[in-house]
Length: 173
Image 1 (cartoon, helix red, strand yellow):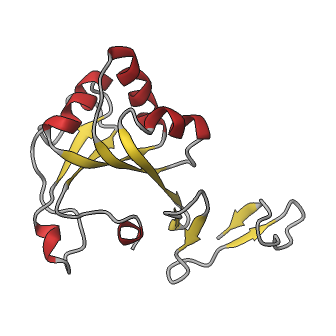
Image 2: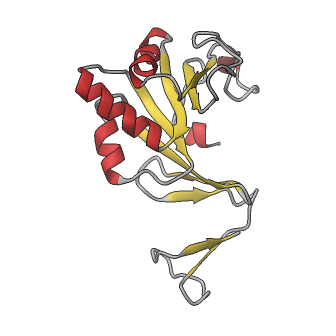
């Protein structure tokens, strides 16, 4: 659902940056691993995904983005930030439509470094081991949409009472 909200085109390529112990890689960096989108849409059969190891140098990973014709990158939020800083240092550019991050909310300085250096947009997923994929960033702002059909989430204040609309708090799953 989030890919549709964000206008992702499943006929284009995506790269997943994952940490894999050196020597334990299962795939070559340029090995296509098949479709990545919703199988109910014909366009999904055209785009493919690649897995790149975060143990490789940032220069290698930045260069592979364009070599593989990737439009999207899925990663923990700290990796694209580091890649953007390294791209600036090396004078490199990548041409991603968007970063799809997980693991933490991207800090404003992360987004500022990435947008225009390696990607046009940054989309974030809120998740936890205990609750799975709970929500996705709004395409029109910095708020999140909860996956209400898959998880029951309540935002509470420091005293355990439900927060008012717009009030920050902690999440109970």
